[in-house]
Length: 520
Ligand SMILES: NC(=O)C1=CN([C@@H]2O[C@H](COP(=O)(O)OP(=O)(O)OC[C@H]3O[C@@H](n4cnc5c(N)ncnc54)[C@H](O)[C@@H]3O)[C@@H](O)[C@H]2O)[C@@H](O)CC1
Ligand SMILES: Nc1ncnc2c1ncn2[C@@H]1O[C@H](COP(=O)(O)OP(=O)(O)O)[C@@H](O)[C@H]1O
Image (cartoon, rainbow, N blue to C red; front, side):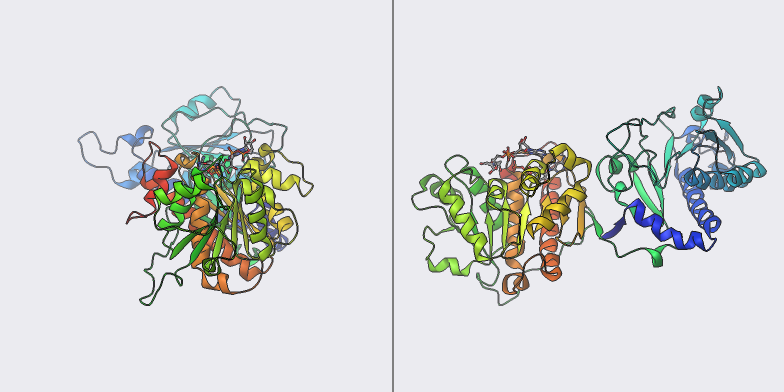
């Protein structure tokens, strides 16, 4: 997990250093890191401009230094400190023999930075100078330093009107791509897509969320000495490809009840398939037993389940002894509006047993403290319904603009950990601690894939003995931490199973089946 911060948190961390007169020193460190990164890009670039020719005319390989000396770097330089960072970086690059041109996007710019660039032999032009397009055309690397962490993206668009460099040019964003909101990842129209972003002090939320993540490319953090001044991170970033996911075998003395028993209330006459998807996923996730609890006489769901998964135990009566074995519940996928299912879901929720509440079942809970450890797993549409019930009138589009804010709000209102599904998965506790999981494939966006996630999450919760045996709700930080860990693991396993199935796409039943494969 990697801590991420809002732009405001990073600016507050900088404040004591600025007050102590260390502003120029911070800028020097940032500029040094930026220049170093550009040098690495120039050394490694094979496709850009003159760098494509990495051998001399006699066919001898050019030493790396030759690729830096004579290379061309341009920068869009805005009026603030972000532009100042780039001006100092250009000055450093100029001293290494790089042709450097600053393209000034405003009426003014960081005066000392400009003086440093000029005294190193670099040039500055207005972005509207007739020569600017040719400068961009010839550049090997372009630095985007028009706007930094100060940008707040609102519903009133303020387009970024920059001349785009040629296709082959490597774009390096300075701190974050111009026009990206550092807190939410929303971007102004016209924001440039960077190949890499050199960010200063800490990773900003806007680099791992929404359009910001798409525009940032590879993110490199430069340490400028802010760590002692940063608050405790409230948001942790988890990348699916690199996440640590323990895959240990059950202990030697395991038995089916000690490995976790998942109780399931899912599927209805309207949506019977949801029960099978959720059950298959939980069973394949590696639990001791799955106990499905359809209402008495719900023959379609019962037959479909047993036909697909003979290992499932069906319990039709609340007083069946086997229900006492249930460690965690998955409630809601495909329950639709069946009154008996609704009653059954509400009964489990009121009992305070650990539970995942998903899909149609989300309609059966209201704001207020949950009775036990509860994980809610809405998509954006379902989250808006949850929020409406606690007096927040937002649309799915509003949620997409600031998913951290709205997921936190729901977690606080329902006293539960909330997992918001979508291109990034945002998981929040009632106290406002968050995990953002990125790197899931968009092939997961297929009907029933959420049911598979719910089954996985229930399995992870059922396996966690502390969660199952310990008292408390998500308003207790310890319980919230365990729920969030189960939610993260389920999300990562879900995404990895999707990745293993390839880019073409798959059915949710294939995804649930893949969880049982040796590699999953
Ligand atoms: N095989 C099955 O039997 C399946 C049954 N399912 C059941 O079908 C019910 C209906 O599911 P739906 O999700 O289609 O509809 P919903 O009625 O749950 O969706 C509510 C609203 O949210 C919007 N919405 C859906 N996904 C969104 C997203 N990712 N971002 C923003 N808005 C979004 C929809 O357009 C709709 O306006 C679920 O409650 C579930 O119980 C689904 O889980 C899919 C598989
Ligand atoms: N664009 C996307 N990129 C990555 N994952 C996605 C994307 N869209 C949806 N997902 C994931 O796919 C799953 C869809 O779940 P859900 O919306 O509940 O669908 P359903 O109700 O049909 O099962 C979630 O795990 C969600 O995070």
